[in-house]
Structures are given as structure tokens and as C-alpha cells.
Amino acid sequence: MVSFTRMLNSVLLAVTYASLAQAFVETLGSKRVATHSKRTVAQGLQLEIYHPEPTYQTFGEGIEQQESLVGGLPADAVSFVQSQLQINGSQIGYKSGYQIGDAKYAYVRQLHDNIPFVNAVANVGWNGNKVVAFGSSFVQPSAIAPSQPTFDLNQAITKAEGLLDGKHNDITPTLEYLVRPNGTASLVHVIQIQNEGSNTWYEAFVDAHSGDLISITDFVAKIAYKVLPISKESLPEGQEILNDPFDRIASPSGWHNDGKINTTITAGNNVVSFTGSLSGVSKQSSPGKFVYNHNDTIDPTAGSNIDAARVNAFYIINSIHDYAYRYGFTEAAYNFQNNNFGKHGKGNDRVQISVQDDSGMDNANFATPPDGQNGVCRMYIFDLTTIRRDGALQNDIVTHEMTHGITNRMTGGGTARCLQTDEAGGMGEGWSDTNAFWAEQKSAVVKDYVLGPYVLNDPAGVRTHPYSTSKTVNPDTYSTLSSIDSDDVHRIGEVWANTLVNVYAALVAKHGFNPNAKTSPGGTEGNVVFFHLFIDSLPLQPCEPTFLTARSAWIQADQNRYKGANKCLLWAAFASRGLGPKAANYIDDFTVPAGCPHH
Ligand SMILES: *[C@@H]1O[C@H](CO)[C@@H](O)[C@H](O)[C@H]1NC(C)=O
Ligand SMILES: *[C@@H]1O[C@H](CO)[C@@H](O)[C@H](O)[C@H]1NC(C)=O
Ligand SMILES: *[C@@H]1O[C@H](CO)[C@@H](O)[C@H](O)[C@H]1NC(C)=O
Ligand SMILES: *[C@@H]1O[C@H](CO)[C@@H](O)[C@H](O)[C@H]1NC(C)=O
Ligand SMILES: [Ca+2]
Ligand SMILES: [Zn+2]
Image (cartoon, rainbow, N blue to C red; front, side, top):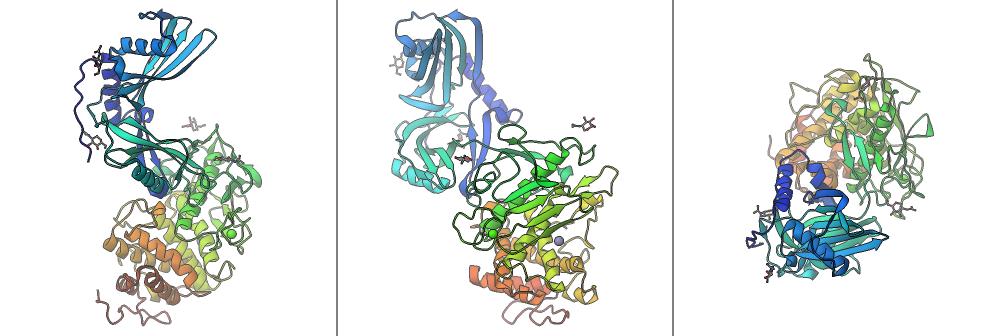
């Protein structure tokens, strides 16, 4: 608990009031980008970074400083700031400055009880003896924490190391004040935390009373991508700019190290996204940015549309790499990476995704060779609308294709030989649809799900029925297989995917929903449990699995990971679609095993 004492200081001037008032306006919405930044760090922890907006004035020829120039730069700086803000000199601390020719620059910080503020600072520039520029983010905090810490520094270090997945380096921690978005000031231990393996380097601000990690400085530059976030299905939902969406645990050298060197193109350790030939990649639009607009009034091949598509494909394949990695599709489990960082498995097999591939139309595919050879994905343009549409901007299609790589590698020990029968191949299609469904869930409400509506320009999408918990919307059960052409793998896949969607719905109804499931494999929520069982069951099931053997692998996966906690729930969900214990030869069984309550 932090107990704030109220600071009733009446001498702060209008300038500072303006600064703070404006900050409040911004927290209400319009210009947050100038003062705020959300950062997701290790373990999915989200932090709100806040900097009060500075006031800034320039003075042309310059203004004479009222105080006589006696004390050199530090004294000049403090006295100028003091006179401008009309505050007590004890509230201003000189930080640094230098002179070069006629120009002088000084940097000062707000103080309270002699403790400097992190984010309430001011800078002064002189030309000769005249002040030419003054910026200030000094504030009048509405409340200020006591200046004696009550949370021990060593505990704070341990906490920051744990939350930021790194080690404190040899830079001595300091005690400072941090202005919060609501205008209060917290006392913080400032601790540098580094992880050289994952290339993170932070300054952690740990509340010196509550012990909470409340903010960070990130010393590592960001990369921005304009993409369709993976939880969105298709382009009409809108591109967004995401900063550093990669997961440092899954991709320790980021997305732009190709295994040997850093790149500034859509090629890295997990995937190369290109058109025509492997060198037909997208470059950064500006340093640290892959920001290309998709303009849906012109052809996918026109303007910057092809770059927007390549960047999106790059982002989606990398994102799936990262979250599937967290759940077990690792180097040792035969994933797709150039550099395996010595963690077993065969490398040099990142995904090659060919965007706007000219070998086909209105479709997409993924070729999975054995571990150690590149997965090859081809994304096509769809020509069912007047202005053609790009499959690489329909996230569920990209996700569907990438999931073929996961299931073909994880079933059968990386040989890619074990989903070859019609039934196993059909289930491959089903897992692919299911992962697309899973990736797009945003809440515990399980809505009917349709694949591919945008590129087809058809709300019914590409499959026979929507995926649904309603038997009216989707009547498929295990016995539906007996009336499907045996080589119609997509139709077989629909039955399997719909079964798994029902398993998902039962788990989420029981255990709830985690919106950060992709980076929170340690969660207990239903969508987290579901994806663990999804991945865990793949290496457990036999080569050329059937609906029956794959179902048994799910039940076993739950036994292994959760001591069978969900056994009856899983049986009930599988049985609801005809896959009860006595199901055989494509004849439904809607019962559950003895010992499980019947639903
Ligand atoms: C400035 O603040 C200090 C400490 O609160 C106080 O002792 C001093 O008298 C103040 N000086 C002025 C000029 O107000
Ligand atoms: C200001 O925000 C901090 C951090 O969110 C919180 O702990 C504190 O209670 C808030 N104080 C007030 C007065 O709203
Ligand atoms: C690659 O980029 C990272 C930052 O993302 C940097 O730390 C590293 O030194 C770079 N490596 C090379 C070989 O340039
Ligand atoms: C999209 O392209 C059309 C045709 O070239 C152009 O008129 C329009 O301004 C573009 N829209 C955007 C948002 O760039
Ligand atoms: Ca591999
Ligand atoms: Zn497929």
C-alpha cells in the first residue's frame, strides 16, 4: 500500500498547471500517442508508459537571463528554470549540460526532498548569453509518495528480474520519482535489467512502497508493422500498426535475423515473405518500419498493396511460429527455423511464403517436407470480385496453411509422412480451420465461425456450414463421414474442426477465457487448456491418425498435462458429436464412459 501525503505547494506557476491539465485531457483520448505508450514485455505483462507533455518555447534572437551570470551553466540553468516556473530552487536539480562554441545546453530535473523525477524534466538552450529555447515537463503532482522507501531494493531487483526475464547489470540502482498518468508521483527504485540472449535491455521502475513494477524504459529500438492483427479475420476489420509484436521467448533474435545476419526486409529466422523469387521481398518503408497501406480500391498488385500483403504474411507466419512455439512446436518438435540456437531439431528450414504466387488462383497451399527442409506456402489472388482480393490479407487462410506445417511435422516425428490417408489428411484440414478459429477468438463468447468470407465475397465462406455449437447451424457428427466422398479432405476436415470447436466451447465455458493466451501458456483458462491439448495430442497420436485415435490422444494429453481434470468434459464434448467411447466404423456413439455424468 502506498500512502500519499498531499503536497500543497502554491508556488508552481501557470506553465506547470498547463502541462498537467493538458496531460489529463490526453488521458481522455485524443492525443495519447504523444504522452503514452503501451508495452508488452516478457510473460505478456502490459505496462503503461507515461510522460507528461512538455511545454516548449523558442525565443528567436534570444532573451536576456534576468539573473546575473555568476555560477556557470548549472547555476544559470537552475535560476532560469526557477524564474520561468516561479518555483523554489530546491525543487530543481541540475543533471547535465555542455558548451560548444557559443551554444550552451543544460538539462535539469524536478526534485522533491532532493530526489529527482524520472519524467519531469526541463531543458534550456543558450546562444551566447541569451536563452533561445526552453522545454519543461515539470508538474505539480496531485499527491506525492513519501520519500523514504518501504520496499527493499534487493526485493525490487528480484521482482524486476522475474517480470522482465533478465538480470540486473552492474549499474547502481537509484531512487527517483515517477509521475503517473493520473498526476500523482510514485517513489521508484530504478533498476537496469538485461537479457543478452533475448536482446532486451530495460530500466525497470519498481514502486518503492508497493513493490509493483509500474513502468519501464526500453533501450532497444522498436520495429513497426502495418498489418491485420492476428485476432482479426480479414481486411475490412482494418490494418493497424503494431510495434514489436514478436515474442522474445519464441524468437530470441527477433524476426529480422535470418540465422546469420540482421535484415531490414521481410526475411528472418522463421519465414521469408516474397513474390516471384526469394529476393522479391518487401523492404522497410523507413528505418524500423514496415508500414504500407492496403488500398482496396485498386488491384492487389498495384500501389503499395503488394508490400502490405507481404508484410502481413510475414507477420502472420511469425506470429503463429511464436505462439505455437510457446505451446510446444519448438526446434526439438521439428518446427521451421533457420537457426535452432542449439536447441535440437534440424534448422535451415524457415517457411518460404510466396505472396501473389502466379501458379494458381482462388486458393492457397502449404507443402511440408521433413524437418530440415523449408516449408513452402503459396498464397494466391482471388478473382471472384471486380477488384481482385489477396489471400494474404485473409488471416484465417494464412493461419490455415501454416497449421498444415505444424500438424504434418508434429504427427510422425518430423517425417511429414503421417497425414497421408484420406481420414488423416481430412483431419489435417480440420486442425487448420480450428487453429484459424482459435487465433481469432476475442472473448469467452463462442460465435459461429465462417472461414474465408472476404476473399470469396460470401458471408457463408468456404465451408459447407459455419462452425458452431448449435446442431441446427452445423449438424455434422462422426457418422457424417459415411456420407462424404472419401477423398473430400476438406469436407472430412469440417467434421473434425466442428468437433474441436465444440471441445473448445466446453473448455471455455468451464474455465473461462484468457485474452492473452498466445503469450500465456501458463494460464488455466479454457482457451489456453484447449491449445495445449491441441499441440500435445499431435505427437501422442499414431501415424495416420483417425478421428477415434486422435480423440483418444486428446484424452491422454489431458491426463498427462492436467492429471485428467478435463476427462469427462472432453468425453462429453466428443460424444456430443458422435465420438463417444463406442463410436466405430463411422457409427455415432453419443454416450460417455461409465463414471462420467451424462450430459
Ligand atoms: C525553499 O524550500 C526550502 C525547503 O522547503 C525552504 O527551507 C526555503 O526557505 C525555501 N526558499 C524559498 C525562497 O522559498
Ligand atoms: C493514481 O494511479 C496510481 C497507479 O495506477 C494508483 O495507485 C493511485 O491510487 C492513483 N491515485 C489517485 C489519487 O487516483
Ligand atoms: C542484430 O540486431 C540486434 C537488435 O535487434 C542487435 O542487438 C544485434 O547486435 C544485431 N546483430 C548484428 C550482427 O548486427
Ligand atoms: C486508393 O487508390 C485510388 C486510385 O489510385 C486513389 O484515388 C485513392 O486516393 C487511394 N486511397 C488511399 C487511401 O490512398
Ligand atoms: Ca526444423
Ligand atoms: Zn488446407
